[in-house]
Length: 197
Image (tube, rainbow, N blue to C red; front, side):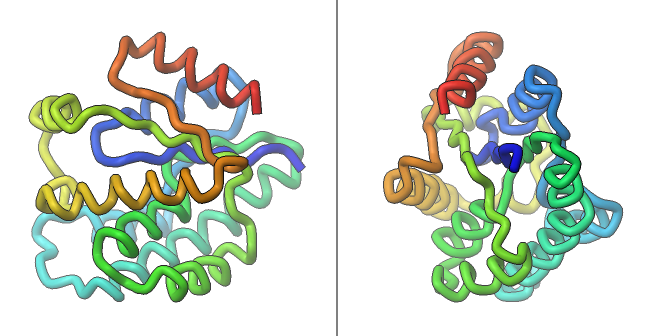
């Protein structure tokens, strides 16, 4: 089966930019979670809407799982079956980081729910983009912030800690790339890490 590659990281690390650059370099299918399907785009609007202020944490986790089920069924699995590499801006691991480590929902419950949603199809390689907090804060100041980006500093630190813990626990699946340098240098580092794996 061709590789299913996910780019992960906290807000402002450049996941969307580097997913697009990597997909172009590999001639891969580029997609994203949430919002990689028409149904997913509608679900993403709810999740990221700053006017949604009373969304229960478990409801948030269920919405992301619904997006993921649709995304894997309609985009990821068909692309892999056709022999195409898939590069995704975020994946199931974002739920573990955001709703698990960030919101405090039981990680085992989230794994079971999401494994069911994706029918066992998890990314074969995860690239974790990391940058110092000051760099990320500067990047976020340059744009309108969505519901997740507006979450507090403690939440975002828990998310970062979650990504780091997952990467450390599964080094055969995860690779960490510094994302605070020149865009072309970071893109080259991401591509080199993927090709090496």
